[in-house]
Image 1 (tube, rainbow, N blue to C red):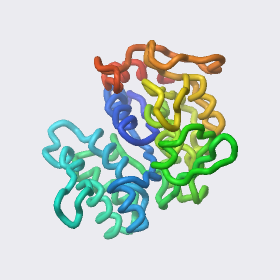
Image 2 (tube, helix red, strand yellow; image 1 turned 180 degrees about the vertical axis):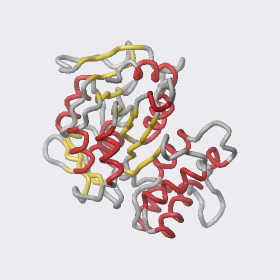
Image 3 (tube, rainbow, N blue to C red; image 1 turned 60 degrees about the vertical axis):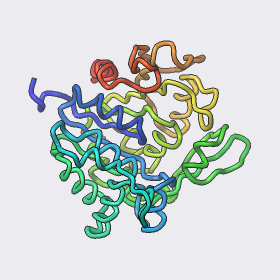
Length: 296
């Protein structure tokens, strides 16, 4: 089977979870597109976002590294290098490169494409795209009416009911919507439900494209609940949260024996062994085999 015969898979989310999904997807996809959350306000990413008025670069950097081909040299691994003892202390090299490319090109999508090309990605086969081309702020509504502002604060908060990005109509690149329209499969997660997966999915342009996507929408559930935003969640609670935001999965992939399913998941669940031996993260090969069986 040639690459052209294999599926086009779009993965949506952020953080380390999306990077793991991308490594899994490349084991079976002919074409891979990442749609990456841009609302992070912590660390190097948050400093650059606030100081330079740009979308958050950190999760994009991780995804570029995850998709870099074998034999691409030292640059992919160096993207995560963090400077110490200088005026740029704490900044990751990849974040600074994206900031510089954005400043010189004036186009955030082009900046991401330029860095991707530098590390050896063939953009016709593997591409990383920001969920928004404008800076956004993530806001959370807590059950009972309280609101929380910022990804870092939301991640630490128990009882999140809904998240939005502001502005809600932040620019979404045409390439994002066309990739979702073209996808044979859309994979959401794993990753922090509200601050990674939904942070990427709720901008209006992305959510609308997800609704009309003809490719099968697969949600990869986390291995365990988090101390903050999803404390006490089972699989059914994850699916209910997606639906509250207008995101309807066609099937859920869950690690066998990890999170309890809960009552009335309301969608097909594939339970399988998809994690590394230590049980704390997804195994790209095992997850890739399960995801490959869910195309169509």
